[in-house]
Amino acid sequence: MSSSGSGIFRQPKAVLAVAFACVVSFMGIGLVDPILPALSEQLHATPSQVSLLFTSYLVVTAVAMLVTGWVSSRIGPKWTLIAGLVLIVVFAAAAGFSGSIGGIVGFRAGWGLGNALFIATSLAVIVASATGGFAGAIVLYEAALGLGIAAGPLLGGLLGEVSWRGPFFGVAALMAIALLATVTLVQEAPKPAKKISLGAPLAALRHRSLLTMSVTALLYNWGFFTMLGYAPYPMDLSAIQLGFVFFGWGLLVAFFAVVGAPRLQARFGTAPSLYGALGFFALLLLLIGLFTGSRWTLIVCVVASGIVVGINNTLTTQAVMLVSPVERSVASAAYGFVRFIGGGLAPFFAGKMVDAWNIHVPFVVGAVAVVLGIGVLATGHRLLSRADAAQAKESAEEEIPGEVADEFGGAPGAIDDELRLEHGRHASGA
Image (cartoon, rainbow, N blue to C red; front, side, top):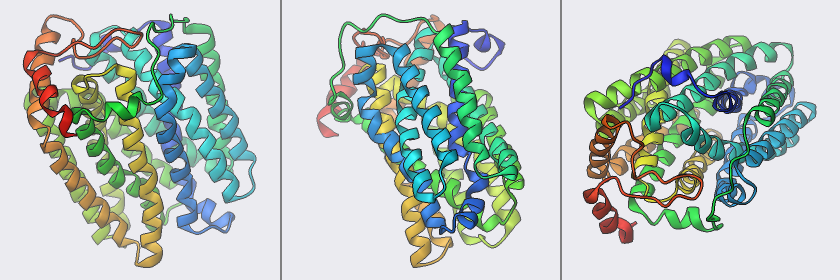
């Protein structure tokens, strides 16, 4: 398996342009965290109303994931990227101009549509075009994700000190730069010979391997977005202070996505590494839930969770691509749909729990959800072990694993005969 190294970052200009756009896109996830208390105070909204910023963004992203392959297979990946970036620029700027929490929530929904078009296509473009093989491409993508997650809260905190509108205008400006880079540097790729149907992502979930990874991600994201959406309130920090807390968290995300995850996978394998990461995350969420009144406990647990997020993001994304017996874009869309549904619903229900009981409850429920995710993942242990073995064999030969289909029309192969048989046995049991 490829580990992180300088070679991974020596890429064609088109790949670097898309990676830069990924950095900015992922800033949008943590961008609003430092300004959540300010939004609540200045727009006279309750925390549960403010949490809809996550819900509208992520639920729309999830549903829109179902059409990304259909769109990309008809207008091509470059124009799909451009369409997504244009929507993000327009709706991020509109959110900045808005004067009500309802308006921002609505514009965040439009932002989520652009985000879906961009995220699903950018991963496929990077994997198809990057040098360094499949594993190296995933690490590059996750490095962009980690940098974006790290920079987002810091940018949000700095601009949020000036005004709560600042972070939205900041993303719009950076995405406009990313749009220009994509238009000028990314070459138009041929449209795939085979067009993807609207029902393909949902149909792909009948494969137990993909469904197992997707449900695991849904349960993990339930805990993750509960933390992201509600931990800032009991910390009682200023926007810039929250920005630095989540910046430290994001740095750990980036480091463990690029360096930690590949090393853990090489030593312990994908499944055991994920068991450990998810177990640690469940413990952190439980501590947050039990000691919500302790500011420093919250800060330490939130920053430490960056370790988990980095490991989980890299290994889960890679595992989805390896074990899914469908085209890469279809697997990405199906997986994105399920996991973002979990991320979108968690802050909404967390708000309801806070209103009905207290702020401790959502974090405890999030910890339980992550533990359930470990149980779901364990049902796919054998398949992940076989995928690890096949990937190691293919990496030694410096080839992309055969299980991963060509994004632009190639038919999926099989990692090996045993893995193909495993898919066949479980296809009807999903």
